[in-house]
Image (cartoon, rainbow, N blue to C red):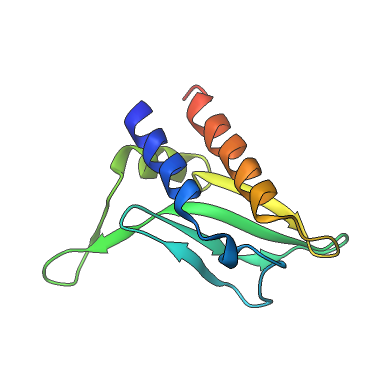
Length: 118
């Protein structure tokens, strides 16, 4: 699992700061992706409002367009058992974090995800 954890940490480090500046858009969608992971904005929570920002494993369609396979199967399997995300943070809408703070919190969440016993 250590190698898969490193892939997630490398993914976080590679997210351009420009994609994390000033908060996130109001509609759900992908913020950043690579061949292994994607950073999404899933929704805005209520009272108090926060952006729900998870890191999830990418899935790839099979050759016939059916079925899917994760590029990081062990993390995807563990994530599925734990609610689907390798990391999840809630960023306040009223006081958006700096890109460095977003990355710091994502790193903490990834490390907690991989440290948890199954």
